Amino acid sequence: MCTFCQVVRGEVAAERVAETESCVAFLDVRPLFPGHVLVIPRTHVETLGELHAAAIAPLFTFVQRAARAVERGMSAEGTLIAINNRVSQSVPHLHVHVVPRRKKDGFHGFFWPRHPYGNLDEARALGDLIRAAFAAEREP
Image 1 (cartoon, rainbow, N blue to C red):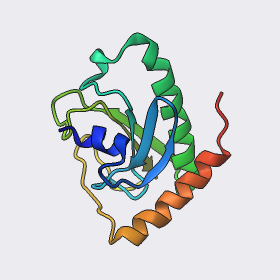
Image 2: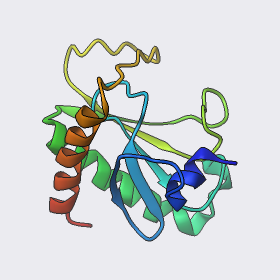
Image 3: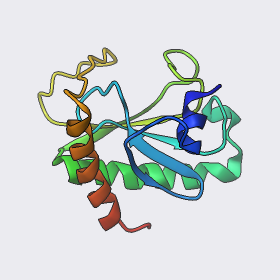
Image 4: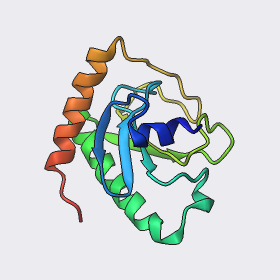
């Protein structure tokens, strides 16, 4: 059973920060940096190449909103947007990483050191920041 499909159905707990009819955004449980969000389509597809063409614009419009919300919510200087297709894809369900970035944050190339949350309260507090920023975000 796909873990992300279970997140979509609410069968697996996730710190959701926003959702639309076609997508869900939630905090990565193994973040590169605090505020690292995953954006997934509700429909199960493993890779970007399998995503129906009509679903691409809604997904990336939502990713664009997520990037702005993560920057605002985390007071970040920018974001990293990344997709792994099969290789290094820990869950075989298309997901877009939206990672807050700051100059000299220690991120070097594609070596992704993980910075886990100390506890669920910390994750919830950061989720609140990003949820509030999503709420303030307007669709283009």
